Length: 459
Ligand code: MG
Image (cartoon, rainbow, N blue to C red; front, side, top):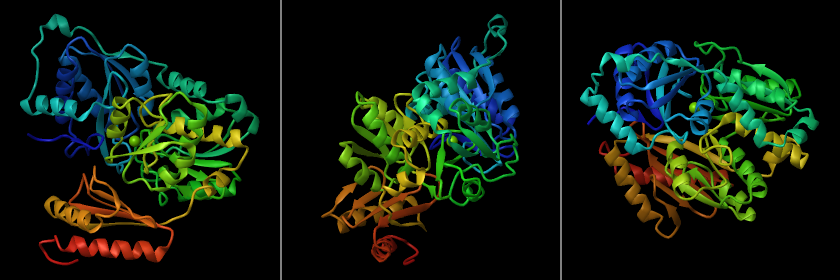
């Protein structure tokens, strides 16, 4: 059976593999999954082809007898929040998130606001490949899609209600916002205004061609925003992805911080404020052990999960909740708000941490230990990767290990993660140590062990 869904939704290049025909057929499959009479909220980000995909997909949903509500341009977490809190049975978000500009895609959201679990993706894939299509009598196809307004406003209000507005407002912060030319331009500046924050915006005009930068917020794509933080003497900077579920933070010194570091700071604070939530956080194995080191004194346990936000959200929910879930890529789930990544919520919470402790953003990040990091990859088939992982488990058998997604070794003065990529034929290697030479030595040994499994021989 074919596969349509990747780590988070269906993705394709508009006009190449993401055609109107594809979107129509996918819409019928999703409609078949939700069922006749179900109520589905649809939104989209700014990406090129979004109207084409939305039009075709909505036609597919309608032809299955689904009642469609169309919210238009909105961030993914806004759709998720409204689906969870209102009468909807599910949602569809048309976005390719952080992918390069030529991509678009579809995220399918369950009634609880979280993307559907893997088993439901399989059900949709089965319907798609079967060529599912109901033949409904004309009378049952009389309902037009209904335009929905107010999604953005409800979402922003929900975030404002989660934080200590007075304490943030008193500080009169200045924040640089990089909206990646997409839908967070509709929400983050509005949210900040309600928190009495002065906004300096960059890439906050909507533009499907993404002229400012790639939609993925990373140290190399946020250089302009970081420069602006320093030159405008801002207290903080934030870079979103294309659909607003990620936020990468920039401190007042212009340093760009990965999401596992900001996640650790936020979760520690949240554990002191939201005391009724289980004292644990969920994060992907690709997060640094800095998370464990930092959260231990707060009595917060770290649950390592396979990589992927849907897995994190679904595990947290089914295992009885947590304080937070987060990812190295900037996704942060503030559980009291919703079980999904939310870039604007993350930003508002970070401002509360700064105002509550009365410190600069750079001082907060300076609390975290600095490690030398290596991220690299080796070309390998899935079989070769699995062989290498077995050998690595033997080699490091005396050490503490997590083996849910590749192998992560906790070596005391280093950690290293080796896992097969979910999207390309490579083995990913990530590791950190306080001494540069130490992590170089460990990664060199890991590469030697991997080479024993490569049929082409050696690296
Ligand atoms: Mg995203």
